[in-house]
Image (tube, rainbow, N blue to C red):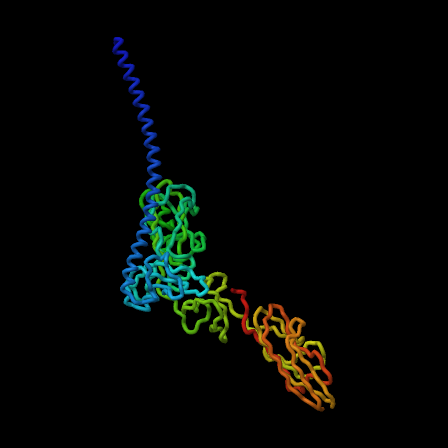
Length: 492
């Protein structure tokens, strides 16, 4: 057994104390390093977000400079550049092309670059959206591309989280939603590129959709390539080339290695992508890349315009009544260009056709009773009832009415007849017949333009008479006509 002196024992005790102190210090340092790492990670992620914003701002500045340079080389007012899109002059003299295709059609010498466009056009009522900046690819003359920039074009890593859609990325575009929807209406096709690099970060997990994107209307979409479908799929699912044959996306395979899904989403009726949502990235990682919202070519109107959508394509932007080609005739439509085409059809409201022509074939002597018309030549809209003699307005609007006929007196005495046009039992106007010789005939006529509410009634009647009455010998001498001049749709 080893024996130690007092001095040696003191040294050993101090050494043990030192070792214990050192051990505690290392654990504290590990904990501190862990906390520092978490703070550093948050700081780094925040810095990355700031840098992404800076990059977007710098790209915008570069675009502005390129626009300024290009504008100095151009003498084309339809494709003007602005040094700062936030300071665009919206007075009536500042007119921009609606798409890059229109810029090219005006002058095919234009080169690719950043331009200012205004899809919804100039609105003298001041209700149009602000013009905005896009990139125009002029390299394909038959389908020039208009590309709308946004702040999420670079490769961005999704945050690690577990729940479905727990990571969200809002996409901020350089244009308003209405401007982009109008651009889609004017273009032949629109699309958006998407790419997702994943490691154990699926779109679908055990039959549950954990990742999706929000469309123009904030509806969830689960397809990542092609046209709209209710089925979850990627490009490899469409072509049948996924890593696992029973999967619709490569990222759904669950393989602990880098996999990629990419494709072109081409349904212009629901683009652009407003938000990306990813889940179950906690076990691996996911990185998304989203291309610009791109539209190319132009819609073409074959023949005469048949709707407000056709009129918008042809360049009309001011709301009001227009004549378009109907099924059997030219029709009047009210176009509210403040609305988009898909907004419940409000952009394409047809004026209801209303017109009639009725006649008598017998005498009529009743007073304060609607004159009855035995012959109906026309009654489009079904508003005139010849059997009762009453016209009922089917829609609110401005109407025109005309009445003509013959008064007859068989006795040698001073006679008269007063015929009135009546609206809701109130006299609107009156025609008179005066005769002093027998037998005697005299013609009369009465016209009026009235603003009627839906349901208002109009008729003609003998208000007063003495010896004179409404004459007809079967040759249809009394004629009553009416028509709708302009329907009131209630738009300002």
